[in-house]
Length: 264
Image (cartoon, rainbow, N blue to C red):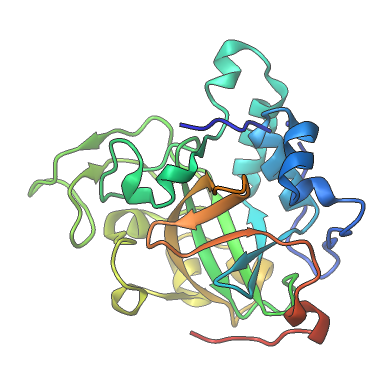
């Protein structure tokens, strides 16, 4: 595995979130400057992307603002500040270009497993008027239960359709996956067959501040995400279904035009 590591801060989702300056913040998206600036501290890199309200260019023009949950921020700040061997083992992994799909990563299983190192729990969220990028899109990452384990799928376990392993994690992040999202996760399947959630459903399942943070019209879909490099050393944030994005330099045509809100 490739380990481009990173070092921490935090912003709430708001209309005042900063947009990276393409000159002053080039270390966020230029691979050579990124490596020189972060010296392997991936945790800090993710925190800085969040703090700067950075957008990721998905599918050649869909701009998603990266937003980290408060609990994941707290975890990454601790990791970023810990230079011990134990701390380095908790740094998020950026996989090599040869592992550009989650299914190509070592010991891959279709499950809801995430460990905040090799993979993350996350959501694609839409219809958020305050999101940077001008398109109403947010890519949220949250904190997963680090004490959980994988086991076989059985009559006594809960797992999504097509799963080949069962993860017994609990909902430990107030802004993260609910027990329902964990139990039914099937992110290897096409989005059209999966459970999209509206604001009311998120709040009923325990995410009490969803509407306050993203607006009552927002809706979304949970995914597992992981990080990998490409042959040009760019970093990609990739969902289990293969949809992925790379940090944008803030000069996309859609951003210049002001963008538009997209539905499903």
